[in-house]
Image (cartoon, rainbow, N blue to C red; front, side, top):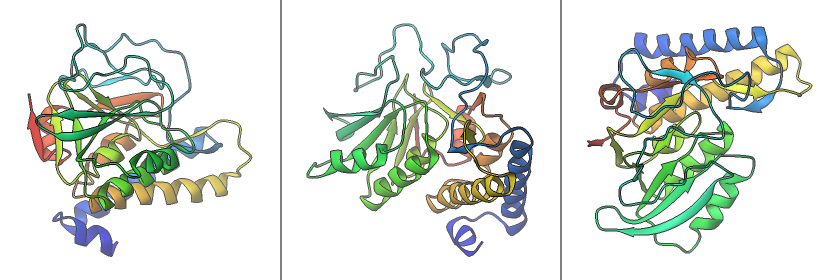
Length: 258
């Protein structure tokens, strides 16, 4: 708890409330799942309409699609071209007038992505990490976030870009975090892929450890850990998109742009 208290100005009762909500989310998860550890929601059918506009009050929860991201007609992506199909994460570099030398991370975060990211950074002069990802394996995203903060990179979410599931853990890690009001930042509960042989007790310990790392990382990066309550209240097969005012309130962005 000491690290959480040093990393945020929130009072102790609020932090304890956040942690309590985390434990409630874990307990609810264990009722229906017994599996192997990632943060993803690849369950159930896709019954929701496509998301074509940023989140609005009363229209923030949608079906989670691990292979796609929200898309607006005439998608531009600002200074960086954005792919429309989400495959394993790719790393591309663009020179931009406003954000310097930008590396775009686009695609799904799978096992080994953090190692590939570290290799892609080797020998490169990078100013900003841009994101466009439906998320994926939380442990990989945490390590990628640690690499971003250790190198003191800024992070960027341009207009029409999306960052959901585990992806915000990388976004949170920027020294400066620039987020467009016309982007999407999505949250949901941590979950396990089906098919593991963990007992209920083993799964409980593993989920608690992962959620503890997520809360600690969020606070240490300077983001209000209350943002994680929205993740914990949203089942893995759905995603909760933050409103621009929430992005500002929780300090997800240090700079909020149009």
